[in-house]
Amino acid sequence: MAIAAHPRPAQFLRRVVQADLLVSGAAGLLQLAAAEPLARATAIDADWLRGAGLVLMGWIAFLGWTLARRAIAAPLAWTLIGVNVAWVAASLLVWLQGAIAPNPLGVAFVLAQAAVVAVFAELQYFGLRRQQRG
Image (cartoon, rainbow, N blue to C red; front, top):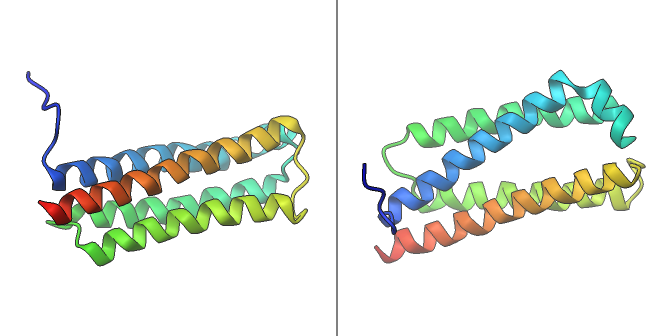
């Protein structure tokens, strides 16, 4: 089976959205299923973790709906990018404004997930630009 080194522009964006769905789904399920152990390990309140997990379940539903579309139109791609950027900003603000008081592992958790989401936003932007250029 040959793997294309450079997927077609529309395929690249679709693959990034698929990866976002998988990673977001795993993170959401982890936060829902293991909120208490995660809370003990990170000093992030279990209710915050569960809330984030529930939001991620809605997000993966939206990503699934997006992937069910024949094509990912530019306005939809911009929505994905915007939501991911908003998630990064909200994650940092919740921590920096003191709504949560994570321990060092919790800070690493917040920063790592924000970094991953920022990468998804950047890759989605890159995929949209490639798609628009054809």
